[in-house]
Amino acid sequence: MRFKVLSVLGFLLFASALMAPVAGAVVIDEFKGDIFLVNTGNSLTTGCGGLCQGPYAAITIDLNSSTEATVTFHSLLTNGLQYFFIGAGGDKNIVGLDLSNTSVTVGSLTGTNSLNPGGGFSAPTLSVFGPNTISGLGSYNFTISTSANGFGSALTDISFVLDLTSGTWATAKSVINPLANPDTYFNTISGQTESAHSWAEAHVAVCPNGATNTNCGGTIAPIQAVTAWAGGAAAASVPEPGTLALLGSSFVVLGTLGRRFQK
Image (cartoon, rainbow, N blue to C red; front, side, top):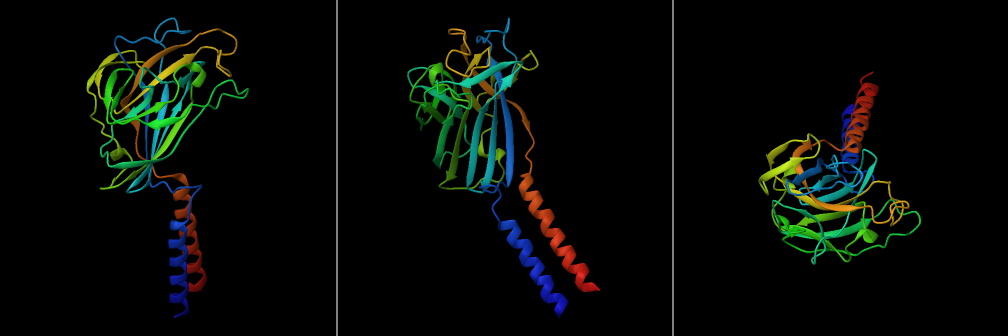
């Protein structure tokens, strides 16, 4: 009887560990993709001597529950070139997604510039725009716009939380429509033209000198902007490491209790 009671206690410890928060929201599944495709008439040549090699940005979708997901766009430093997100056109659209289910509310929408130690960049206000293009290209049922275009309001990170008002998501990848926007694109990683789909898009600018202020570290107006797409190459869904750590520690608790009271 004593062994059974303590086994139940071990089970309760295991269950409580599973439900404990891990550095904020618990992540039960994750999907990643890169933005590296451009349309064949586009160019991004500043400091590259040709089309700048991608990827330009990364996208992470963390599934917090079957009805909540956190989406993060992060611009990259590739081959010594720093990329940024900037608004485009009269609508000032900056990033877009094609969602599998548009019955969502949006929270915690933030945009930051991590390369702003001197405070030279302004802090634009981001808002949900709805279905639209990005700089007149692509077609997305969910877009984010900024309050100001131009490099002075550039961002390195954009994130937001989606909450479903109906339906559920089975995986992080199921948040998006992977078959959106079929077209012929130029793959800036492989250097090949290929048929692909685009489930996300961003308007990005490049700074050849690794910007820490609005003039790219001393060069006047050295940037060009391009609309770029997320390609089909994306990382497989993986469990959050913190969740795996909790599972491991819980099994250790159960195993220790079992060994202790079998003696």
